[in-house]
Amino acid sequence: MTSDPLVIAGRTFSSRLVVGTGKYPSHAVMADAHRASGADMVTVAVRRVNVTDKSKESLIDYIDRDRIFILPNTAGCYTAEDAIRTARLGREVGLSNWVKLEVIGDERTLFPDNVALLEATRVLVGEGFVVLPYTNDDPVICRKLEEAGAAAVMPLGAPIGSGLGIQNPNNIRIIKDQARVPVIVDAGVGTASDAAIAMELGCHGVLMNTAIAAARDPVMMARAMKKAVEAGREAFLAGRMPKKLYSATPSSPTEGHIAPSQPKAA
View 1 (tube, rainbow, N blue to C red):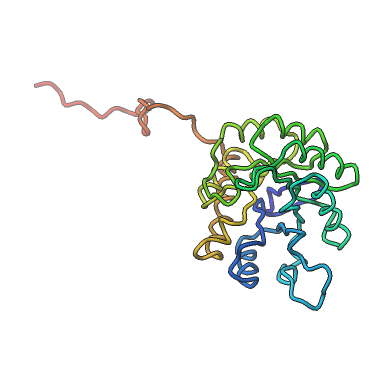
View 2 (view 1 turned 90 degrees about the vertical axis):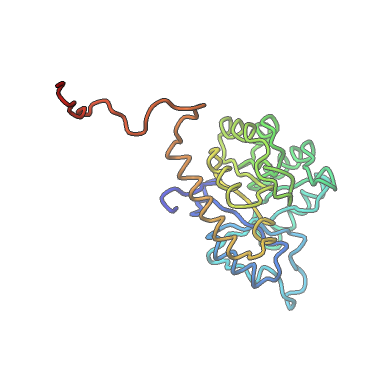
């Protein structure tokens, strides 16, 4: 949808689908899925990138960097200090000064620690990073992250890797209505209809990894997600009909039509 691009911090992306690089059966399958998704931004965990031994294979070698923008992420960080240090490392090794900021607060659910997330956002924005924080579907924390300088806010749809879909659409809608920066649903998408719902709510994009990587056919699922994001965006722009309990109005109204002639009385 090149006529309706996603713009974050002044950078334009032709696709509103952002995909990840983990959990694929192989790097080759990952590369095929990336192509099928049409995504031009992918997330890479800084901790998974081989930054010391250039002679060894790296997943970076399977990303078409002429076409795809790499968004480093701080996956696996449990403190603000650790996330800040990881973001700096990603920039130092030449990945990007952009960062998908994750500060995990609970090991079982991988819910974010929003206090530490806000602290890390302030520090990294102050150091010139373009920060895209992964957070709860909480309108208040999303507003505070935006005020701290986040270039986008990325509320979860459901716990990471759960595939449960959008669990709290009202909160997502409120976040989108309040935000002055792009809103990208991150985490919880399980299938194409989930992605379409996120876009129909007015979100500017969807980020996913497991939904594609853990599918029986990751490449086919990547194609499905591409279509779902595009369809959901178009449905949002088109404006859905109002919801009604029922409608007494026929779909083929008779007003303005000539009534059929009646037989004359005998």
